[in-house]
Amino acid sequence: MEGKVAIVTGGAGGIGRATALAFAEAGARVVVADLNEVGCEATVRMIREAGGEAVHSGTDVSSASDVEALVATAVRTFGRLDYAFNNAAIVGDTGADTAECTQANWDRVVAVNFTGVFLCLKYEIPAMLESGSGAIVNTSSSVGLMGDRGYIPYVATKHGVIGLTRAAALEYAERGIRINAVCPGVTRTEMVEGIIGGDPEIEAMLTAREPIGRMGRPEEIAASVVWLCSDAASFVIGHAMSVDGGQVVAP
Ligand code: NAI
Image (cartoon, rainbow, N blue to C red):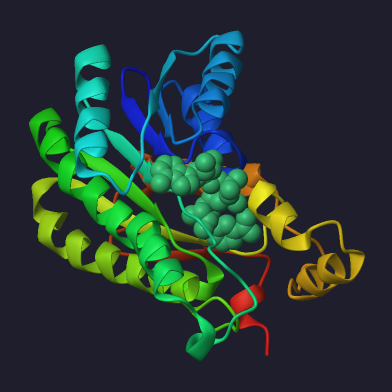
């Protein structure tokens, strides 16, 4: 990935940070984007300390003007855009079934997880066409492939991300841009620590969902994202790839 340029949203921690580091290790220059600017700066520092090149961008992916500015930052700073990992998301409120889910919660999760990925595609694709080719990975989830209870906006938007991925992948397949999705299983990050909330019973329940017998590591998701963007995946288009310790194939 020498000479190439990648955008990573949700890069302030967790899966996004691990993927930003993995892109840099593969030789790409990285624009690390997140609402959390302090976390972004820390990721950029980690990349530079490892000998890579990166800049940060304070970005709210639910804002069209922010996403437009993010892509402009990549092109202005590094001259091109080759890869994007559209990964920022929120869980929203949990523990409320559909009839109890507030519209405010629904609207907030849809704005970040669904509209956010659409806006990223909308502004990244023209920059990639300009560069001649590109590869995009959107973060869905194991619950983008199956149902789950108590957080319908999250489950529905993660299904939606697969729809965005397949539709956009078809449109740009002939124009040199490959678009895929990654569907992580339970991965130990701040998002999951937040759901666990220090309760060992919840931790055990989440671990029990994983046939492999443990949670995933952010680096394990990052490796699959970098592979999907690499030339090794040159015939892979519109795929929703499970990286989930066997979660979705469990009975
Ligand atoms: P995380 O909470 O550590 O990272 C998400 C990042 O997105 C945070 O840094 C947050 O500040 C950022 N963010 C939130 N709203 C934003 C906005 N409006 N604009 C820009 N940035 C925003 O979570 P994690 O676990 O690293 O999640 C990364 C992705 O993986 C998410 O799409 C999540 O839904 C997905 N995922 C995570 C799983 C897990 O078990 N950790 C399982 C399946 C999917």
